[in-house]
Length: 186
Length: 226
Image 1 (tube, rainbow over the protein chains, first blue to last red):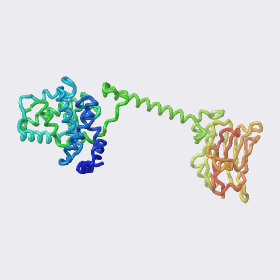
Image 2 (cartoon, rainbow over the protein chains, first blue to last red; image 1 turned 60 degrees about the vertical axis):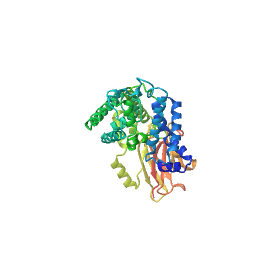
Image 3 (cartoon, rainbow over the protein chains, first blue to last red; image 1 turned 45 degrees about the vertical axis):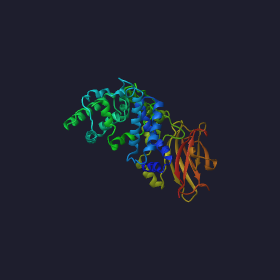
Image 4 (cartoon, one colour; image 1 turned 180 degrees about the vertical axis):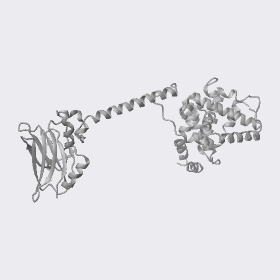
């Protein structure tokens, strides 16, 4: 079923919408939740919560890309759950999902305080991503948005883990230079 | 900026940038490889499997080519020269040239007889047909088939039958037009086939020649001449 038809079902308060969402995006949302939570039961709960949140949010919201909307809800819920459980993201310190490689990317000295500055930074990141070649862009997004492990990225993109690592390192370096040229300190 | 803050900001990137991640189908469950096996090992394994497959297919093809079957009889005696009957080497080329007509010879014969025909030899048999010709007997309902065979005698006859379809396509005895047991002291055999009710002018017929009634025949196809 097309996204617009599913959203129409949401607006009609037809519970068939939840079935269609589950059928179309269930596997994708489960994948995001599992990537973050590393636990099947927690992930399933998280996905069910995603459907409940979507039911509450639509209407009034009418997301242009339903998949992205649901994925974002899933990711936020999973991260909140990690935080409330008092763990670091995905399996504790030193694990693949603690994003250790970002230690050199961000200094931790500065903070984006205002909403305006945040929006501006986001716009610059969006513009940077659009200029990237497709493959390194998708690897970067899958890693830092989809929270994929390095081994999963290697399998998904048909590369070795070291090649994925090199691609991410280069993209991070380019992004850092791109942001610093525009006056953003990380 | 902290890692957490960067990831939170990154979480809000435009939807269209995330779309490739959504559109990509769920990966199939890994069956053969665990995640601990490196891609280079996987590649090496798959390469070895591919090479093995190619060799297996090649081997089976060679075996099949060298194993004539009833369903797929060899088109020519040349398909399997290793199983030719005992003929002195010096005579082989001469005999083959007389058996297997060249395209030019076939055309000439077709012109002469008004119809082309194909000859399939069974190299499993110990008889050897050197020449075959089929001709219409003018003014009669008969067609004559002339065979020059080797190793045919009263004690060692060959069986000839005429059918409307080849042996491997025969469904009933209704296809049988006539059958003969042939002997010839001089090795020359002439067979006269009478047109019958089953045979229609222009229709294809099959002349099957075998050493025993049950053995795989040599098949000669032709058409009833007008």
